[in-house]
Length: 414
Ligand code: LLP
Image 1 (cartoon, protein in one colour):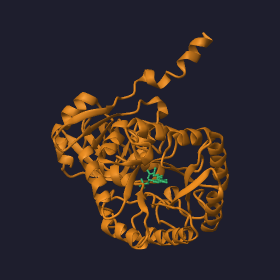
Image 2 (cartoon, protein in one colour; image 1 turned 120 degrees about the vertical axis):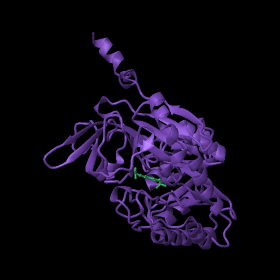
Image 3 (cartoon, rainbow, N blue to C red; image 1 turned 45 degrees about the horizontal axis):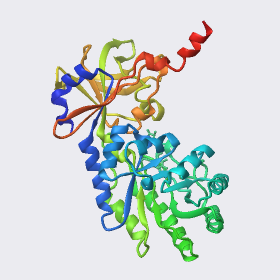
Image 4 (tube, rainbow, N blue to C red; image 1 turned 180 degrees about the vertical axis):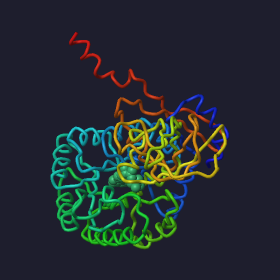
């Protein structure tokens, strides 16, 4: 995978500059099929979670493979449509959908809304009534299971803001079933992200499948079993579970039921398909530490400082992978915070200005969480595939882009 673009890395950097996000679209294809194929014996929909990376060309690539979309804002729904995902493959989740977003999603005719509270259910009913339609809905059920991941991305415990309890779900499903303007079609859960052990997922599937069976038994017409996302990926050398075991566990729990399985993977599809390439600016050795200062920063890749996340690094010099011996250092950016680091205590060879540091596993929640902090332009994005084809999928922001929405007000004051 990596070798396919690195022979021309100098040319790439010459053309597009750094910091630069690079995506291997062939790897995205592989990941999509690897998951989809595990459910070949069943009706299934892979609803890619746009939040991981919502670049239009990347989503369009997934749309061409047949992917649907899991969205958490009207903006993501519109992105999915723009990228060519059909409305009937789009799901809209999130605890804080606003009335205008619900109205628009219902008008578009998406597959269903994943409802997360009683108040939201009543809002959906009201909007559907105003539109004179019946809204397809699912409830996000919180199974109260610890996914054993970073607390910020853990969502399946009763202390988290997500979903409704099993008891509340029963009550709300019955309410929705009786409503003229609500059509419960699915059941959903998502207990967290970067899950490395199958156990919490298996416990959740068991609980939610049991609830599904009891709802079907009393006549609810549920047709979709949505298992959320959360499949963990290796960043270092973590042991992940086998996709085969994951799929078989789900299939076993649904035996005898005629429901379509929906998966909402984000990280699994794009995480290890992306790289962030930065240029070394300076080395600085203080009394206590060696720092390598690069042109990328926490505004480009927030994960290290926000979640203490590890992203493996490679050093490229004059088009070659540098493998010489090194010493420990922190790789930091130009932002005015001590929290602005991209790697801590990594062993790197002596570096010179212009050497490239490539952060791996940066395809998910990298560019998607980038900001303009410190008035820094967000990076360009470039895609490549196994044939060596390269194409730009997002321009580097300009300073004009950064202040375009403020300038008219400055001018009005003068
Ligand atoms: N479905 C729902 C309802 C979600 O909340 C999420 C992620 C996904 C699917 C996709 O999860 P995945 O397959 O990517 O694990 N910024 C964090 C991750 C936040 C995940 C939020 N929800 C990070 O950089 O690790």
